[in-house]
Image 1 (spheres, rainbow over the protein chains, first blue to last red):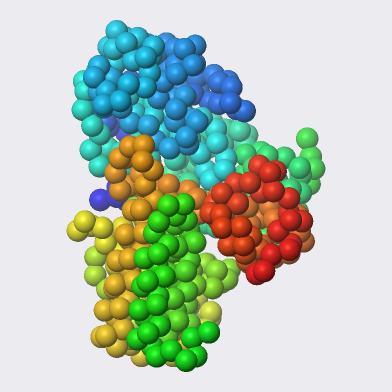
Image 2: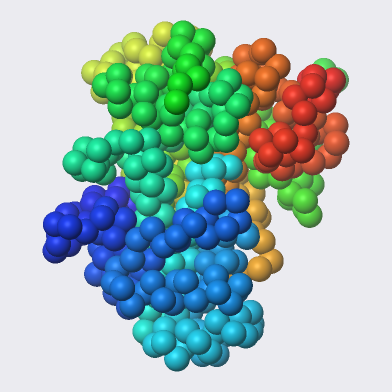
Length: 235
Length: 246
């Protein structure tokens, strides 16, 4: 059942061993078990430049993830450029050769299939989640859906971290689904113009305000759209 | 415009119009919007809306005939309760002939719908290859039910909506239905973000902002989501959108 996917992801995250793991590492580790992967990694990209690997299922993955940026090609790079999932089920013998350098390098590192999902919320683009397998084969329909759910959750969590929510509170945030209320997106646009910032920062400010006020984000958003609330230009 | 036509002629014209829009440079958002408007007109409803489920199974709004804020609220409130919620999960049409009698059935949705001026509602499943991907919502301001013939037409419109959604496929690769639908949902988010930016820049309401975006897209034969992206990224100024035939 579709609605169980988010619960399954959250449960898998709670089950990951290791208290010291960052929440994004935890998400990557959880996806390995859920989708029987070799590994998973999240790269954050700002203005077209990789700013860092934000999460990995294990240290070995970081190298393959970063290799793509060194070579300037790979599923992560393509998913970022197109803002659409990039699915390569057979890195050894792809239907269409697209990564003449990364392909062989990946295979040598034991990766035989890669699936990249952009991290975005409308026009807000923050990075890419890449899933790696050591066997070739397509993702099933259900697995693609899981990839999309993981990507949405990662996006929401990264934006949550940026809004200053303390790491402890993230467990509540984890239970809170990413918002799909139109007013949240409208308020994001409004705040972006009011404060002269990008959409990503506008959303972060809205969430920070909601967190400090102890009110649901949706309510804050409604107030902004109805001009009952105007976020101030604060540091 | 349609004054001289019979209803049958209008139905035929609608199907031709919708079929014509499924071509190159296809704009799925505009397509669904037009389909919702035609549904409201042909099925004699006060409001028609289309909801689509995302990868996590959450129902989200893709289009409504009026795009008014209250209508959107009522549609998106159904991700936990209401006719569309039931319709999506059961894969079968769901009906309330009188919302006043169904406040127990839908304690949050029914009063809100009545408040918005609606008294009866139908939800029709949108189906793709045997699975339900969302629901079409038809609201009326009087109690009662839509006739069988009209319901068949409604199901036909819902099926066309599903076909249209799957046309939004890039040549590049087949990522499956779920990824295509997620792409359409993401386009909708871009439009909402642009609505907010334009509303604030131009000092107008979000509903009026939507009308301007849509008017500009039509006037220049461009996709709504592309226009929205251009506005967001500063390639299009708010003031340019003030001079549209909305």
